[in-house]
Image (cartoon, rainbow, N blue to C red):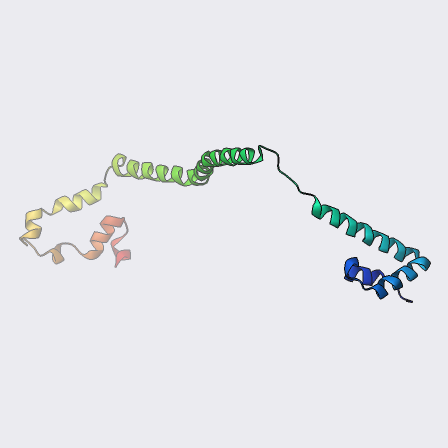
Amino acid sequence: MSEHITQLIEETPLASLSDSDLTAIRTHVRDCADCARTFAAAQIATLLLKEGVTEVFEPSPFFHTRVLATLRERQSANEGWAWSRLWRSASALAYSMVAAVALMAAVSFAIPATSSLQELTSAYAEDSVILDQGEPLDDQVSDGHILATLYSVDEEAAR
């Protein structure tokens, strides 16, 4: 066999090699030091795998108890942690909502109504508007005048 046997050893397990392949490998290994190391490593790996298959690993006597205790400990720690993480992410939103409600309450109750709106509403008694007494409403006030009074803009700009 003129070529190196490394590829043959890597592709095929030693136990699956035929007798003719093993003879060719042993003949080549006498002349090639690199292939001799590869063949020796393959033989050692095969022996280690055979020994490892027969070895049985047993867990320690209280392994199951320790695993369950650790699991319960992590679950109890995660319950408090989940709520704190939720509060950290939502606290800014909650504080801004409280501030907005407080601002709206302050605007609604602390700032008095404008006098021009009070004058407009007091100029017309409810009875005269409902019962259509006196001058017609169209002659008294235009839409532009109402908008100007409500939004404090010029009557010309409102038309």
